[in-house]
Image (cartoon, rainbow, N blue to C red; front, side, top):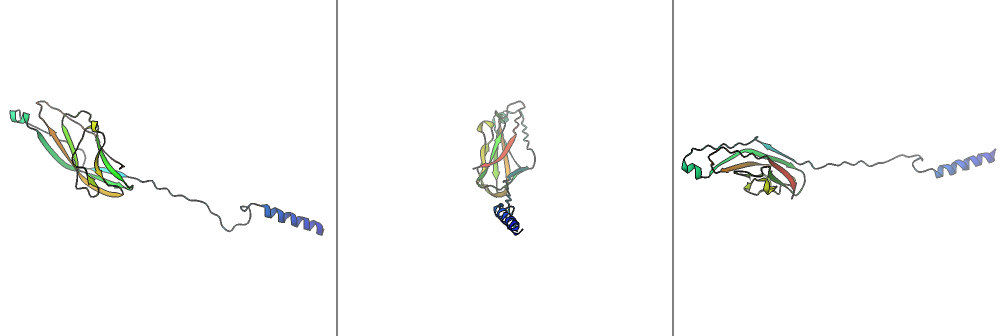
Length: 166
């Protein structure tokens, strides 16, 4: 009987030694937890749509003079969590009859690129640079310039502001 006990004891000893560590008695364990935060850049326009209405009398001096009007009723606001970003502006109007210009006035961060003429043929143009990792705002000043034509003309621009890498 003693011989059998020794064999059983040796068998269990060899079996326990050969068990992987995960089956042995453990007092701790571990795993990996990963937290990924994607940068969420946000841009918004406050103030709604802009409409310019030009009226002129049919006198000769009004037919040849350039008419201009400016509106600063909108504000651009942004929150950018990535470095090296800028804000571009585009228009969808491929053949405007009149000139429309936008300028970012008094930006709280970044550098305004001054007056930017809007025309889809020009593609995306820089409005503000150096706005990475910031929360800011600026006034949008639109200027419309028209040459009276003697008939009603309407230009419509769908203007898009986009945060992109510099």
